[in-house]
Image (cartoon, rainbow, N blue to C red; front, side, top):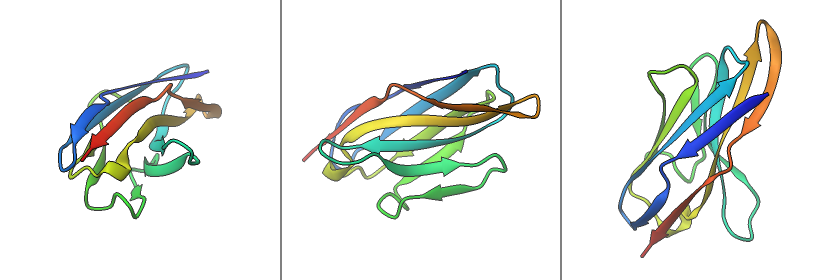
Length: 119
């Protein structure tokens, strides 16, 4: 089972910055990880991912403002969010797709962390 924990959400004014952190644990070796978000009344959407081979991708809405990166510790992930907009307000979730001893270990989801951007 893959356990995922996020941290770092909060409230900020438009134009401000926040940094989210995520850590995956359990019987895992390597993980591809990503950030998703869900705003009230909307479906969960992909924000950014970091694949097993280090490839990154971003939703068009956050390109140039958000940066995903791997932490120094294995299976940790950050999301640096700059120039935040009110429309970035959402619950942000971290997901980790992991393997273990050459087999698929599963996907874990964090409980989410609230990001609120005010005008």
